[in-house]
Length: 213
Image (cartoon, rainbow, N blue to C red; front, side, top):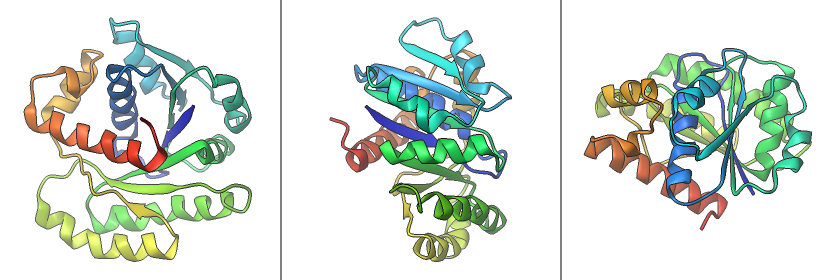
C-alpha cells in the first residue's frame, strides 16, 4: 500500500481536483484505490457520488485518526487522501500518514501563494520530528509559463529550506478539469490530449518517487 496525501493549508489551490484525478488515474492503471476525504466540505466524496464506475472506494475521515486508521487499509494498492485547507489536528494526522508514501502540496504559480505555502511547510517540519515524510510541491492551475518563472525562484528557496522536492510535472488551468469533475470523471477519461499528457506525466513522476509499479 502506498499513500498519497494531497494537502495545503492555503485554500483554492485545487487539492480535491488533484486528489480525485490521481485516484482515477491509478484505478485506470489497474490499481485498487481508496479515496479518503478528510475535509468537512466533502468535495472528494461528492465526486465519488457522481462517478458511475464502481472502481474507486471512498470514505470520509474528519477526525485526527488518519495516521492510525491507515494501517487498516493495506488491502488497497493506493490510498489517496484529500485533506482540507486549514491547520488542524486532522490536517496534521493526514500529513503523518504520508510517511507511507508522499505528501503532494499543490501551489498556485504566484509569489503570494508560494509565501502562503510556508505555513504548510512549517507543519510538515514539525511532523517530521515523529516520522520521515517525503514531500513534493506541485505547480497547479498554471496559466502562463512566465508567471511560473516569477514564483519559481522563491519556491525553490523555500523547498530547499524545508527539504521538500519540486515536481517537474505541472498541471495547467484547463476547462476540462472543471468539466470532468462535474461528470464524476478524471481528465484521463476526457477528450483533451494536453490535459491527459500532463496528468500522465504527474502520475508517472509520483509513481517513480514512491515506487508504484
